[in-house]
Length: 72
Ligand SMILES: [Zn+2]
Image (cartoon, rainbow, N blue to C red; front, side, top):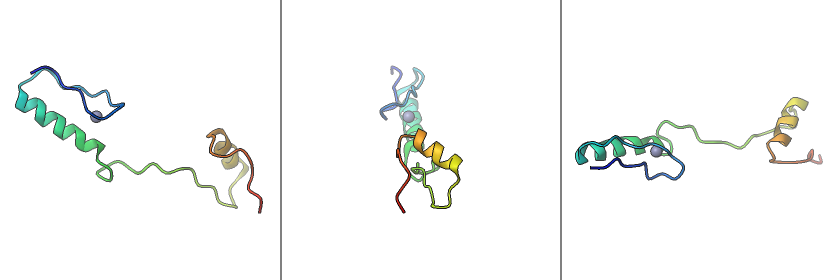
């Protein structure tokens, strides 16, 4: 059986050219790494509190999430 690539878009995992049963097992085992909540932390957007430092604000702006200080 030819090598099989991970079906997840953007993932470059590819199995070796092995027996079909082994390839299937490898793909199944690998795709569990894409399962939300399994072992991967949820990606959170940056959160800035009103007490945040100027350094945090600079980082937040560079991230493109906001371009100005909130009006409070
Ligand atoms: Zn993958």
